[in-house]
Amino acid sequence: MSIDTIVYDKNTKVSGIALIDDGIVKDIEIIGQNQILAGNVYLGKITKKISLAMGGEGFFVNIGENKDGLLNCEEGDSRLIEGQSVVVQVVQESHAEKHAKVVRSVQLPGKYLVYCPYRMEVKVSNKIEDKSQIEELIETVKQNTAQEGWVMRTVCVSATPEEIKAEMDELRAKYEEIRLKARNSHAPEILYRESDSVVNYINAYAARGSLQKIVTNDHNLEKQIEKLNLEVVISQSPFEDCGVDEVIGEALEKTIVLKSGGRITIEETKACVAIDVDSGGAFSYGHINSLNEEAATEIARQIRLRNLSGRIVIDFAGRSEYRYIKPLLGILEEGLQDDLNKSRIIGLSHGGLVEIIRVRRRASLLEIMSRECKHCHGTGRVEKDG
Image (cartoon, rainbow, N blue to C red; front, side, top):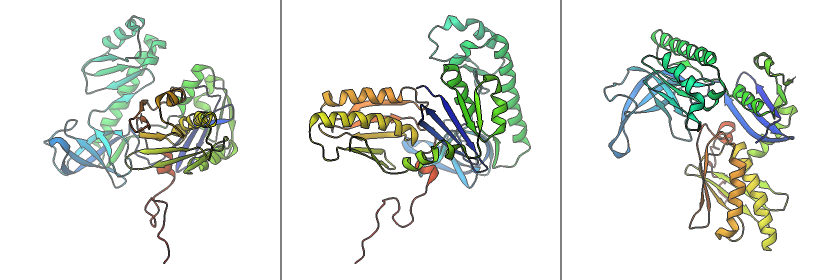
């Protein structure tokens, strides 16, 4: 996916990132300033030991903001006791009624490496097929490592040994800051806050050569990226000026009207995301096929815009035989191929439904931007009078 414009809107409560290509918003990410993000490190306090499925054990850990994280004993220690302080890192954010998942084995990602102070090995990303390409860099890491672990990321193939050494020192220093802060803090306390991903987006799309412009209200960002020689437009209301607010409003609606006259209805439930494609009264197979193709393109876009994740089930219009659905699977795969959240299109179920599994990084746009109605409790319906 090519992106020519990135919009970054930051205020005291939230920061928002929008990826735009040829005037069309492709992706939106909204992050609350106090949001418990994957990657955050906390000094937590054990509040309760619990029994888990399959005979497992775990702990609830108070990590602040009146929220508990779930620590599995496989990652923790069954000898922990209630009231004990423990350093944990969030690996999966909370969703609906599920607690955030935390672990004790802290990992700190850099541009080229991931620092794993609790490991004692050097690993290389599986995406690097030609390992001989980075033999010198692997040797550089091994020569500068003692009683610690590292994962060499895909992008490290473009780094020099000097850049690798510098990042190793930087990540070690960051971890030492976390250790020192933990010693002088009282649980619950945040020790390290994962920065929002705008710079990562900018670096990624600038490297691809498609990125041309940044629209933002953050002057600090302008300084961070000045070496990239991109056009930077300072705006008081970046999302409003670029039409992102309007797109967010549309993405919070259940129903999307297609140009062909059909409709897509999206329902987020606790078990899965259900997507239904309605033909809008069309009956000819030619019309339904083209409608489904338009719907598949829009569904891939909406999955990213709304940050839909977990199990996603799609009921396309018309007949559900594989020969009719196969082209739609290709459209979905193409629309999700550059998605930062890994997606797997399982295919067509026996019931004629298309199933997708998408990794959950953080809450959906609907969860972040709204709350359940206290009158209808999320059904969208109210009791009839009389």
